[in-house]
Image 1: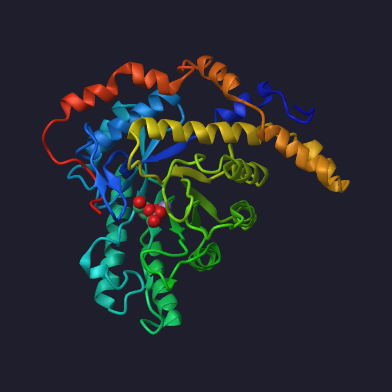
Image 2 (image 1 turned 60 degrees about the vertical axis):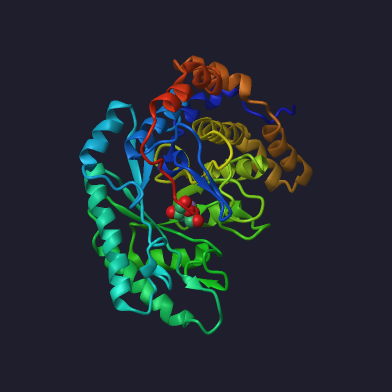
Length: 392
Ligand code: PSV
Ligand code: MN
């Protein structure tokens, strides 16, 4: 190891600030367009999903909140769900809209040609705002399925104007302290053109809306080869990076465990987050997972994921920034690169195990979860009912 890796002790306090929100849908059944596999013991309602999420936090101390997706997580009494979460030591976080599973939205939602459909989509988002008032959530996350499969299907420009208008109607309905977080995606379910395809389009709409509109960067939503850390830098520079949806991909929106496919990319992203002021005190950037565990066990899959983020964050924090700045200034190409690589190749796992123990957490969260017996218990207890899932 080179000299330019800071001592682990120096980053211990900073590491304590890492908080990763879990998606409720990670605890339901999921799959591909080919097959949804069910798993024994899977949650049957939002209360059970929150209980599963609380297990992740209990063993890692990294996941204090759970994001909900409406209508998947619609319950009669959100106050009751909030109290349930509190009893289990977690909070309810981001509320995600869903305008992609209703037949009315076949040709779009916020950008639809028919004002009745647009109004329905806006009303859905405003219903989510009402939920946020009860759950105490700060963020309304909007990802839209809107787009075109074929040239000639719609007018790209007119659709942008409709989008702008629909977003403004939602933005005006936010309560104070709430944010609108706009997520982009370059393709799917529309394939020819999507209405919010990239960070620049999301950014332009956010700027037009106002200060409380920020961009969500889902790591799976870019073309192969995209330099995601550049986008992180730019959005931070512009003050509009609101949130991450973390996951891994090999091809497209695979929603695999973050850091599993390309841990080096996650390291580079976390470094730009840290360098750009998006980490820790004073930052409003939220870190969330947006993943599905189709073939692996769900709760351990989420534990593995938050640990991956923690490991890459630790490595990013270990980079000796002043030595790096010196190398960059001096035009020391190999020196600068070596500083980064030294940190990346540092095995932080033994230090993290000790760090956890020092905070009353198990040294090995996955092992602690397995030995705790929760996984077996839910298999025997959750008999009957309908398992949660997104039903593809
Ligand atoms: C769309 O692909 C997306 O990334 C959005 O965040 C949705 O809300 C989520 O996936 C649903 O799984
Ligand atoms: Mn997402």
